[in-house]
Image 1 (tube, rainbow, N blue to C red):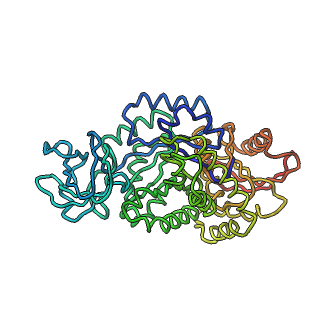
Image 2: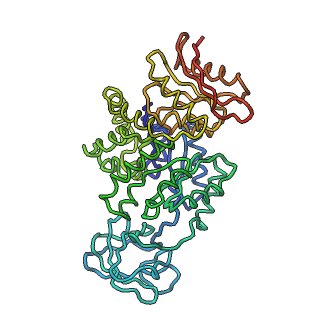
Image 3: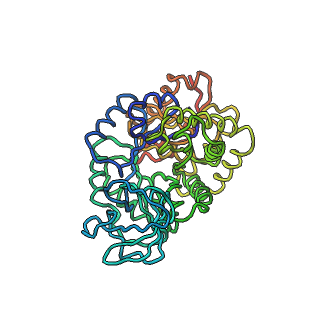
Length: 461
């Protein structure tokens, strides 16, 4: 298992290859709810995944306030051609769109369809119909996303479909939900409220100028973050993506929030057995910059080689693992995070102390009995070489920790007081990760509030 984890989107190409993908190095599975129409089919998939491997985590992306085209037959177009786009229920004909954006666009505005594969320029807006000229692209396909860069289009954050999806997610054992197109902390709070009491963690996906503007508050409110390079690049420009990625990963590292780097990581492997060299460099650099996970999208959902793509990503991450601590790169990152990390609570002081102790060559591992997984996340952010073992009785927390950098999560018992420390050490030892005579740093929350407050050095016996 590599320190940086792998998340892959499943779809028609990979529904029957999940075990092979796990064997190739997969840590988590993503489902895009934008394309889900048959809940019974997805529920069956979730049960199949759980039967194949109960330890893998499953995440879902909400559609969010994303504008999509409606249903129609694919339309071949040429540059300079005139096309009309109208709201589904307007009765005005043209290519249908699911949300009426005509009041918010005007002549000269750009419509980016399918991540910019098709670009239209608005020539005029008449009676709810947007008359456009094709500037780029060959085919307009149904249900594809539509971006209007820098436009402020008022939409309720949780749509009727999202609410149905959240109800389904509550009932079907998901571990993470990502709030697509999150514009501010209020959008994250709305999703959290819909999932209250479930233990499902909510992730932020800031994909437009409002998300960028409110990035800090989104990260602080979310449990986990995604660097959504696709829609963000369409909305704000491809040239903005590298700086955004660096800023978001750095902020998440400092705050101890897991972060995923997503979109077009090995895109050429959608149709090829070998990736571009620039793509392998992209995956490697994302790992070295401090991301917790790297994500595959179309490569594994509709690509020809989903298993081979996961295997290739795993190989790249293995190379990154070798290099992380062979030079000063990762050490410098760890020290930077340590210096900038916010220290607000007792647990923050304890976690920083764990990092300091782990620098001693005689320390073999970090053992963390945990109920929520938060302590493991806060310790993981320092990106040190020593292995981190989190032991929890909570199955969902155990699966969620499978997506956190450098953490190996194990099943424990629900115990009280000092008993949880002995149980955690015993389980890590039984799984062959530590041996008699090893020195391990143990941190845990004991007492009524179970907040991280205990730090001790134990010799394994």
